[in-house]
Amino acid sequence: MNWISQTIAVTGVTLRSIGQRLGSSAVAVVGIAGVVIVFTAVFSIAEGFRAAMRGTGDPQTAIVLRSGSDTEMTSGLSGDSARLITEAPGIEQGPDGPHASPELFVIVGHPMKRTGRDANVPLRGLSPAALKVRPAFRIVEGRMFQTGTNEIVVGRAASQQFNNLSVGSTVRWGESSWQVVGMFDAGGSVAESEIWCDARVLQPAYRRGNSYQSVYARLQSADSLQQFKDALTSDPRLNVTVIREPDYYAQQSEVLQLIITRIGYAIAVLMGLGAIFGAVNTMYSAVAARTREIATLRALGFSSGPVVVSVLVEAVMLSLLGGLIGGGLAWAAFDGYQTATMNWQSFSQVAFAFAVTPALLLQGLIYAVIMGLVGGLLPAIRAARLPVVTALRQL
Image (cartoon, rainbow, N blue to C red; front, top):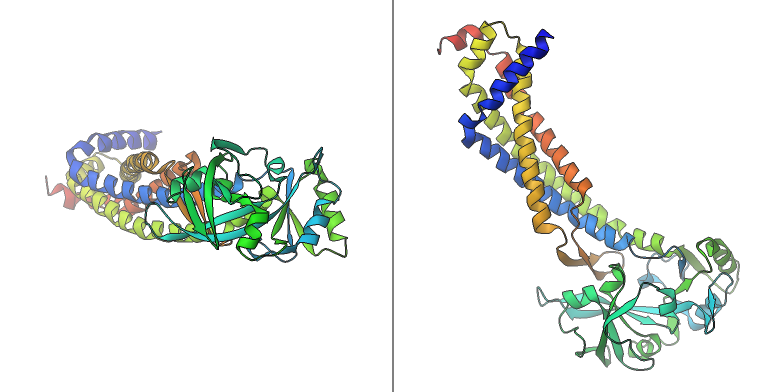
């Protein structure tokens, strides 16, 4: 109990004296806040992209690709294969037939609003049953395109990120001109980064003949996937792979997440080292300013342990303050910020919003505390080893 009471007493004196060292303490707080801002901002990109991709898809929807393909861009299905897929058991049926949509996926160049430079925009050709497969879809402005015409509807995110995609505008891609007749919402999913048109019109525009790249099928239930998959993979006329829609889009986020995570940790470590050196200097200054105080306490019988704890507590308190400030500024500046980036698996632009999540803010605080502990350790040891006689000569 004597050690605990000494620790509480010394720590209390230390914290009350921070006001006398505002300049050096502020340097440490600002340094750690800067690291937490960058740490949070970089990882909020990965969180936002992951949320956009993983939030896409319905467990009751399956995607059929050519066997060996991991994206629609590398897949290819003939018209006959697409027809066989739509006739397979396990697909939800309606008065108008099976709820399955053979689709074409191409990339078009279109200028971004922020830079004016061309970026890869996904243009998707749909079949008539496409809206039955996507129950979350809704038109929020204008109307749906008419079958057999050069009309397109654009996702809300695509309209925000790219030039000249408002309702009523006309654009030219491939060998055709296209008129924007509507804007759609898809529940914040990655589909809102796309532009949709009639697949039968898109095929001749890009000289694709009677071919598709994928088939989106609405299953009778989420448990019907295995029945549907078995029917397709056992058919000798087909060479396809079947994947549940949420799983497909989750896989699409893996490459970019890996890139951002590695870059983020590299930046965080480099900046963290700088912040640690700043904390070391700050705490050495604090120990130097309290030399006589520490010596007096040691002369009065206080052990070295409470002195070490008091210095570390000060370092942690400053780092926590820096972490809170940095996290708050990062949340205010970046949470919900709309941007677009390349999906390195489909080579198309995906619009998404930065996501500063509570878990990410907690990670930033933990990182701040680690920087504070590491930065305060050497000064704390120096304070504990300070010769009492030498220090008392400064009185």
